[in-house]
Length: 208
Image 1 (cartoon, one colour):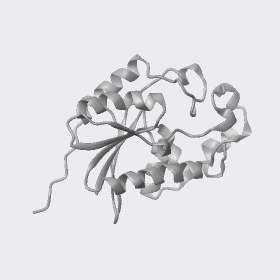
Image 2 (cartoon, rainbow, N blue to C red; image 1 turned 135 degrees about the vertical axis):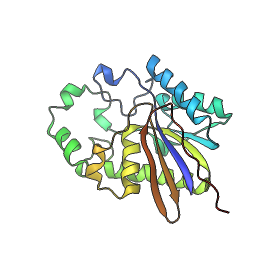
Image 3 (tube, helix red, strand yellow; image 1 turned 180 degrees about the vertical axis):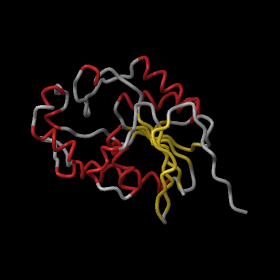
């Protein structure tokens, strides 16, 4: 099985400003986010990780950089790991979005939602799962770090656990956290969800 460490990028100030980030360029880690990235590098640097993949957005790449430095690996950018394409809602004030009828459906029945001039949650889940399947296929029996975003991570976990899409918002994936999936041809196992450093994984032992 491949062991995929799904890392949510570190904290940034954009959401604190009350706006929906989506794929907005130029969102960087704040001081706490940089500290989270350093802590992730310290914990993940102890694992036999063979590759690092990242969303191309700055907040993901900046989280991946110290991990890559600790492991002496290059960061491979994968557009399939991009955050949600929220279309016309990108950069919008959340206080205005909360008043829209569609926002209530986003929270209660995301399987029915397509963002205005953006993608649907079903398209998002399909895109992310396709990216993860490609990574798994290239790294069978290896540890791989994958750095990207909250909703894409939660939708991937929901898919591999067989959860209904409308339940994915119940999963918690905090900034600077790691969730771990073991993926193989015979299925998937969730080994960890929403871990924050410092942590240690018990590595699987080889069968004699």
